[in-house]
Length: 443
Image (spheres, helix red, strand yellow):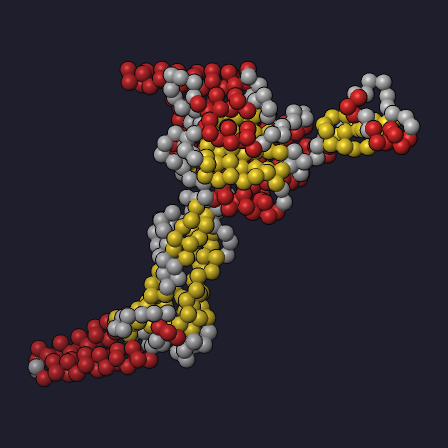
């Protein structure tokens, strides 16, 4: 642990000893020779400080480490431990200050650690991240003393590292438990065994009146000498694409988080549930250009990849390219799938581009269009105005609400499952709609 050569200071007991030396001032009023005794006492205290400074372990004898007890997740408490490994024959009493960004904790944490000789000591502090992505941490500033606590050494431990803050993992786990306990998982299993629906091969049987000729298995017919039909079932592994708009509208904050944060948390919850149900999940997060693109797949490794990618989605200060995102999906996803589009609607006189983009997906795919609502807007539209300014704001809010309702109704008429959801309820609403789509075999 590197340190400046003369990085030293006075310990708390040094000042106590100096104050004790002031007792010589009283006799000094009577006889000035007592002042020489006070000077001698001060010199003795300085000598004690010098001796204690040499007695205190050198910075190279202390090893400081930072230990993460759990992954850092958005809007969740995590614990971080600072540990000192004392390799000297003298114990230390230390104060440690960690250099962490304000996105993890508003104030730098300062902890107290006592490490005996040839032993270890540690202390814990909590963080509460308010921003996803990579957070850069600096080193640890250390002030420590020997058991006498007369002298104090300063040191700096180079512990710079980059830590990734993930979406809210607990919310995804909560919805997984809900799915396990829900009766809908049993309905899902029954739907998977329904014959005559879907295009996944299930078994063979003799041809019956009403069977389509395209379902005739000609190889089996040739072997048996009679018509044999193929029986299909609902596909066990369907494709779910989660499309996350990272444009300027999603930067609006609701509570302590942005709309984009809520959308990312909901995307993770839905991906967890869909893969648990046996579906393959893909991700497209976009602004002016695609930020994160993950092809559809399933499995624990794929879920970890989705978590890593979702952690790096960031809001952009300009309008996203919705048409580009739609063209990218139409080009890469030929098979019918469920498109879950998480976005918001711009307040313009023209039809927002995202509406036209989602409409392009409908002939081929099932589109679940989720627009994040602004709770303050709904409250203003429902409140009673008290003055002229309040009346104007009330009328403007009502106009915006009606326009949003009209745009979503237009999407529903075209065949989309369009809804407006408050950010705090987004994860639960998406999971319920996904399960309803699976139950009704809309794919």
